[in-house]
Image (cartoon, rainbow, N blue to C red; front, side, top):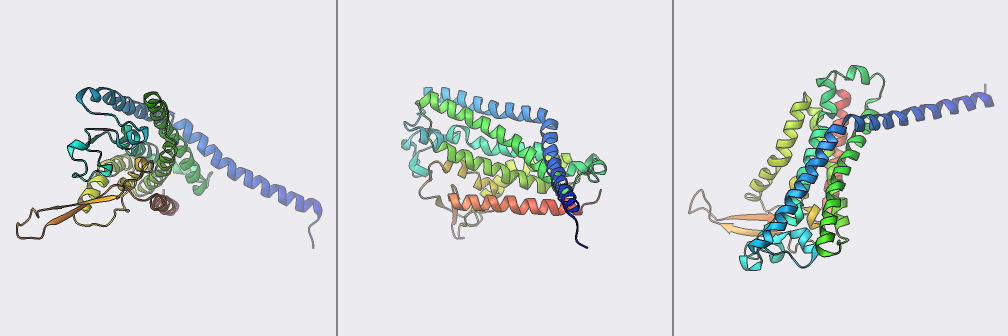
Length: 319
């Protein structure tokens, strides 16, 4: 028997109500995570501003020691202050022959660190905390795990994006005061930094899904991303000439270099083999940055792959 008009309308209304409840669950989770993380957010903003102030103060004093500032603001953003080409920048294999640089690009070396800390502090407890604090018993019967994961990730990313934005606003203000203009290329760096932040946050969610508690997830994330990956990348360069696209630490180099790509993107140095004088010499290849399309593709793969694995583990894990 065919359903009457009022019955069809009631079914449609119920479906609309169900969709509204699902979307409300995500929005409520976003709002809840932002409110719950306000203290962490304030501390991260203070950290980002503090690191920038330190770099700005150092940059203000270094010229008195003969360390010059480039005439082009774009060179200043990418390469920072320099001792000049007379120090042998080309012989050292530094991009652009800029010599020995300090705080590469107005503290852009700190952008990756700020993002790692944001991701660790905000995302570390995201999944592991449900088992650590036993809150899953209250949440899971009321909120679908996928909606909980999406809402939590969105909330944390909004906070992380604001911290990164604060750093870039300070960079733009400082550059505008020092040079009278801000290179438009800074927007490209800002976009890569935000994409990098999202990819790292997704990776941290995967770490959180694997860890038994929040503390372990936070500590492991900070140690692994801030120091571990950098060491692994440097060690790998001694045994392979391949571009280390597997390393987020290497992909982070795209944040400053997207404004002005070095050419070539790598440099090789041959050194005597330390294990034996009769052994073949070692060729150490240093890669400065990936290409823009390659970096974006790798970051997208990091984000999609880690987020899918994190949800799979989150869904299967028992309270």
